Image (cartoon, rainbow over all chains, first blue to last red; front, side):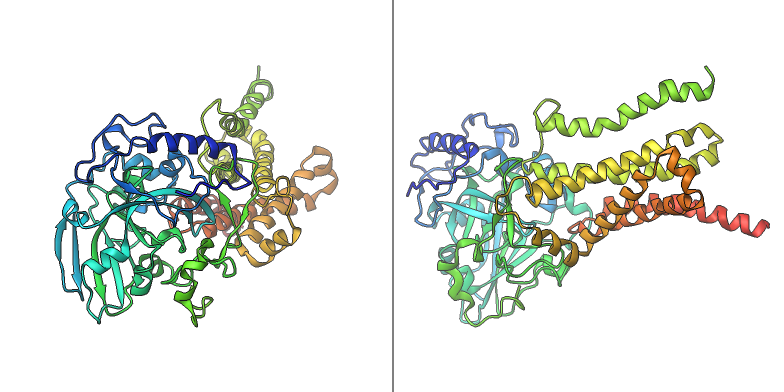
Length: 319
Length: 208
């Protein structure tokens, strides 16, 4: 992994990075199925110990940002996951008892290989990678998160979509008994998201199954979620139970809820404001009470990898 | 001690301290004494001051109906204090936004043009700012002397407390991303408080 310290590093980040590098020493060869439950280091009781397990055999990635990651506590205590409530601290509180396993994922639509797979079987063909990504929320705050996941391009390739497949659609678990936020119709359940095939096969897109070298906490979308770092956070659909290869652009939840505020693409774009607030700058989580906002970058700074996907597309109209 | 003395000697200091408690807790949490701020501390403080401003305008507007329903005339003695605390929390909300969130106090690259853009292009901010201006006008004219000197005009000006209630709830409603359930609660309370006044006014008019 490329370790390049940015000049404007914050004291809080140095601490978190140190913790984080220590914990990397724990990562050893093995398989995801054999992920062992270890006594996790005390980094705040945001995730119950019995839900924390080390992931093993994780490769590093050239796509990781050299920026220092947020603390484990930031990443697991400040979440938007309406399935567990609309407050930022609701997911950490109400996902404590969410046991994701056993979990199955249905793959259907225009592909050669379709079917319903147990989580371990679904994961078996793919290699785990660590991707330290910037995450920019549509609410104008940002974090740096060390995800562990698999390349979505590899997943798409594995299921052999046919020439009819132009989009990939995703669906979250709909289970109000386990996801109390779904007892109120704040959004239409289940949560749905989608990407074009070109977006889904971009090397930056991953399906994440963990953070900080450990299995995914419930509040972050256990056991498996989408991460597309050049788009606003809400595109990163959590707790995925269905992946469909579609010939038409699939409906997506926030667009259904507020079509004038959230589009299908939702690329991070400092020049196109949300109708109610500016997207020109962002508050960096973990920077403290007296830190200035930071200018937001086009495509969240991932333009080199993804800008070509939108050649000729009017990003003001296709927000 | 008669009621008036009790209010002055015991009630007022007690209520004053109680009204300061939410602000003290913000400071305590910021220092890590009473608790902790969220991972987004500026937003946390902004939300808490804003929420308390709305709660205080509700309490202020509740004084008159409560007095009328209960017959406890001493309640009026607390109305100015509650109104001034509304002003206090709204000001703290505004200052948190200006100094910390927008960054006047912490951002070397701060530009007033950003504030101007927020006030002109984001209606929910303009609405909140209008409410603050009305609160300032009421706060500076809240002394006994000015009240006497202004006569009827004082009453007219201080009717804007109703407008502050409406603008405050509207401001809150409009900035919520999706889940408006808390905003609904405030809207219902406000509707009851203003509705009662309207009802009594119509009753009085029809009796004449």
